Image 1 (cartoon, rainbow, N blue to C red):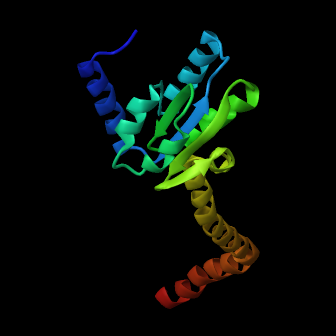
Image 2: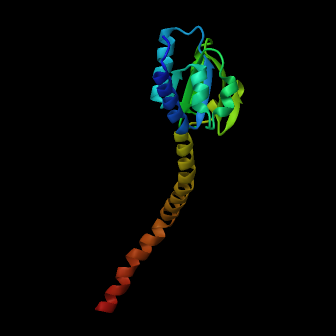
Image 3: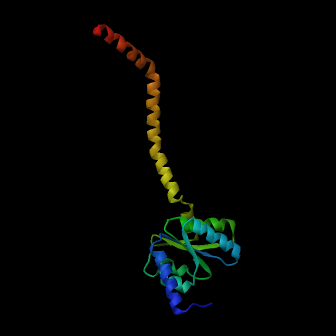
Length: 180
């Protein structure tokens, strides 16, 4: 089914809006995938916040003109599925993870930060931990010195507890004769 001019303009506008708020574009050839496989890929993409669609390449090229993804225009040939994501690694990770389990999905390339990526670049981007994982790793690094400091203080208190207890017990005995 071909699209009329207004429908094509709507597709271009929709993809342009996605490209404007995305950091990453990943392209993959889906030739030979069954409908069930594509549905699973789309479900995975939706869960990760990735805009994943099969688009006409000419419309996709028009949509990315003037964006950081224009550098990937020469890779837009053949039956492709396009993945855009606001998270820097989500689109690459969804497509690369699915390609590991299904050899019919072939990573073609993509774009990140205004630079074109080849298939190996997309796979390398997918290997980077997600934003949430990186944040938790930084939080763990920040928490570690504080935990060690608390452990040292606790050990000092336990070590010196008998001496502190003796001082506390001696203090009321010393004050009692002075009051009498």
